[in-house]
Length: 169
Image 1 (spheres, helix red, strand yellow):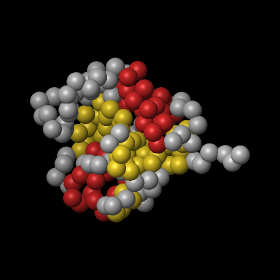
Image 2 (cartoon, rainbow, N blue to C red):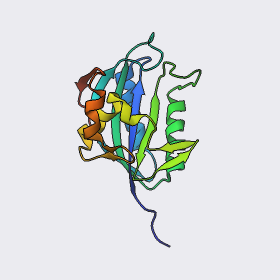
Image 3 (cartoon, rainbow, N blue to C red):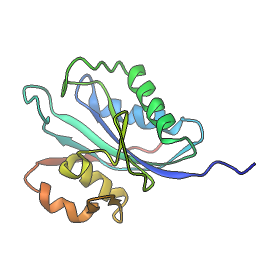
């Protein structure tokens, strides 16, 4: 029996309720504790304006890279479990949230499954994803869209503020 294949996955983290910086830091620790998964990089923290529903606090965002032997659906399920531990509720689209974890990329997998679309369907349109992603993976490419670094020009009008490097444990 062969060992499970290790895949590089990229995960977006965001929070805008409570203490968002501390929440993102704690969520990174939770990602590090996932079975069959090694956290290999985490971006700086970035402050961004909300998308969609504008009348809510700014978000703190980051992107993490993890090497995992979990399947994409199993990883997504684990991300949802972490969100739930942090009190995430899905009350309405673009609602404020204690924690949002999005599976951005799972290797070079492309999937149109409604439960798990890969790559994340709007990641190429969002500076709060592209900038932290290119910080930790300058060579990252988004299937169907090309190099993430080349997509930064298209989101230049979205204002981000870099806060601090993520504290290592």
